[in-house]
Image (cartoon, rainbow, N blue to C red):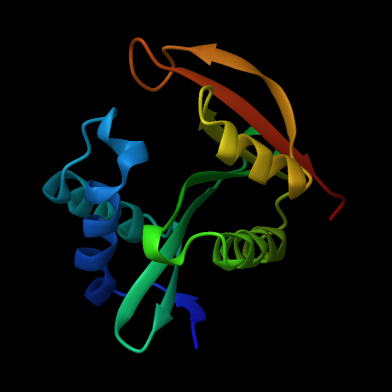
Length: 155
């Protein structure tokens, strides 16, 4: 039975491994070492990093950056579920928990980027109530277009 908790430094390695082995992140040239360094920095900066765990196993995670920018928005930097646990509701559960955490910090909006060609992820976020705002060519990495998604609520 999985549960969602706040990540601790002990989770950095398994999360970094999920990032480095994700087929979706290969085009961004993510390495385990770089992922671990980015995650450690995010945790030092008090980003919200949630993990779905079953015992000691990390099954997925959500990484959220809360900001006063963009009229108090939270940015979903990453949401990844291990391939062996996809399509079981874990991603939706992580996203719902991330949204609750953001709302608790008075965020009015939740924004995220999805690779424009990733139809599966785009469909997932649309089912969760996100609206596609537009596309950003080469925003994260040259040659890759991202779609910007937004979900707003009243605080």
